Amino acid sequence: MLWGRVGRFGAFQARRILMRACMLLCLSLIAIALYLWGAWEVRGHLEEIGGLTILGGVWLLAARSAFAWLGLSVHDDALERNNRAAFIAICGGILGITFIFTGGNLGEGPTYWNNVFSAAVGTAGLFALWLVMEMGAHVSASISVERDLASGLRMGAFLTSVGLMFGRALAGDWHSMTGTIHDFFRDGWPALVLLGSAIYIEHRIRPSILCPFPNWGVCGLIPSICYLVFALLWIWHLGAWEGMPR
Image 1 (cartoon, helix red, strand yellow):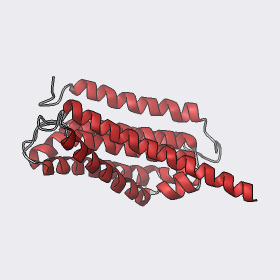
Image 2 (cartoon, helix red, strand yellow):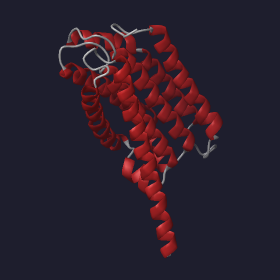
Image 3 (spheres, helix red, strand yellow):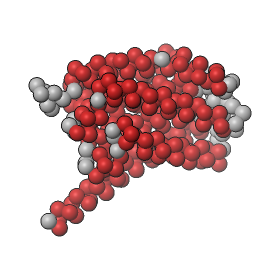
């Protein structure tokens, strides 16, 4: 019994390390993006990059804690219960928030509060789509209760893809709050198409009495790749954002 407890504790610690590695990767992405494409007073200035990266870390922690409101808890599901599906979905959500925060900090603007506003708009948008996804497909039950790996893969890819599209929609020079919201809807509306498609797919291939354990490759990996390709193609279609350094 003692060795079993030691083994479970070691596995829990390993999952904590992996979650921290995910967070570290996301912070690295924020810092690299700021170094390459941030505003002129940020690019190449380590103090400004460090300050915004720390703000990004706080932003990610706050958003991550809110995941539990939509049925996925970092501590309970991903760490304590060793739910791989939840772990993957949560990491996808963290990546999505990372891309949104990063996009909101790319471009010229008078103050850092403009960056905060842009990131807040995108973060609220991601949570809004996640809420609709949950109401329309009850995906958290498939992940946290059924522990379906395919559902976790799809949800993680969906959140990452939405983050990619919203982050690109927020990138660019600041003009006004109204302009930021206008650009967000103008360049981020395909996320609604992805949402509708994802809800339809969830109803078709989520765990059921006839198929309680869907194949993770066919039902999880393939749709996930499609979500990500859709997002990347839209970003490619939009091209460079206003004020993007050459």
